[in-house]
Length: 68
Length: 405
Image (cartoon, each protein chain N blue to C red):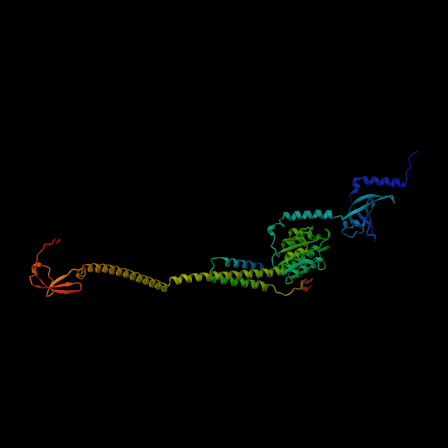
């Protein structure tokens, strides 16, 4: 999956997958595919948020970033 | 002799005249400030002057909320208050209730003019508004590094989501060069491609906020490819920047609340979605299993084994039916036979013998039924119920009996 995807987009795709799973017509094989895709998306969402507390950065005159 | 009045009477009379004048009760006066004295009691004494003269003014400590800036020598101000006579000194003065820096009126006109122009150019149109991302992971902030605004934003960010990266561009937000500094900040942060940029500052006078009413700032906000949230002053302060921004936040704190997504809510949503997936796949599996079981039952009904079983049952049934029919027939035949036996019995000579009849034969055992065949003295054998007698014919007589033969 594309790592550059935004969290919003990821959630949109997750919702889409859920909708597919809810449908009556989906085959068992496809439903497993969709399920794995959805779970992978959620995992990506989670991974996108590096759980490191961020120091606020401040831009100096040269356009470089320092800690605030 | 004319009337003579005391000083007090005159001053009192004049005070009364002033007091009855409706206009003097609430009046706006503009002029330049001089002789400012902040008294330890909290009262402010000053004079207002213009080319033609001066007027003494006082603002009592109780009215200090009507003054939002430091009163200084030479400022052009507009003062609102009442003019009353101070009897002891025989002087009238302006009792100030509210003091504004003059020029606000000019600024207001400038504001309205720019607003109209930019609006006519379509810069406030909703179709140009970029959506604010719901989950911004990197947030740029253009504001003063020393103001309350950045502290508010940091505090809210730490509380809602400490994993969001904030990048501050320390801008000059008021005074000379503020607009340019804000524009530079927007451009500089744009190159870092944050998800969203907050542009703003804390509360202040209309002059303090003025940079956010400059056209250059409005254009920088409008042209920025990153969504911008404006957060200028207090709830009631509305600037050009607010109109042109993709979203207006009433205060910097509110901007932080809008832009920085709550990590707790986010994890809850992830968990919910995860549960929904598991629930769906489980019910899907349960559904398929139920269908499988149903098919299995149907299939087993249709299998050859069950066909054979069915045929066997059919054969057994037929067998039973045949058996039954046979038995019925046999029973019937038995009945018929019984009847015949009964009838046969009825016809048996033995039965006749039982009823007292005798049966006549010659000595050779041949039956004698015709009198013509019997001779006198011939020996005959008489058979009866329980024995036989050998007799000799003494006489014979032919008798005619009527037989329906």
